[in-house]
Image (cartoon, rainbow, N blue to C red; front, side, top):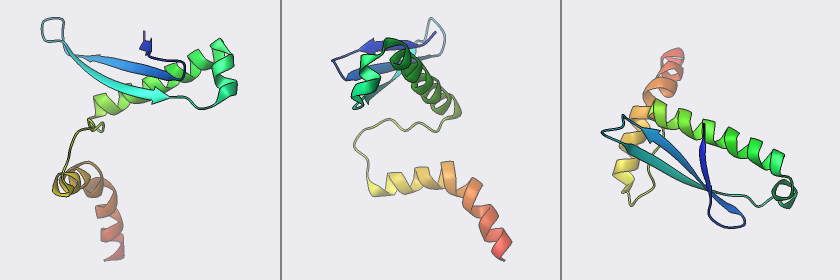
Length: 97
C-alpha cells in the first residue's frame, strides 16, 4: 500500500520504506500537481499519485534514485557513468567500432 501524505493543496509527499522493522529507512519525494482538472477529481488524483509512487518505488529499488542534496559536477559525472553510461552508451560505442 503506497504511503502518500498531503502537504498542501497542490503538494504531496511520497514515502517508500526500505529495510526491515529494526533498521527502518525511508526515501521521500515531494510532488507538485499543477493540473487543476486533476486536483478536482479524487479518483483520478489517487490513481495518478499511486502510479507516481510505484514509479518512485521502482527507482529506489533499482538504485536509480539520487537523493537531492548539494552535489558537485564530479559527483554527477561519477553517478552518470555508473548508472547510465556503462549500460547504454557502451553498446552504442561497440556498434560504431
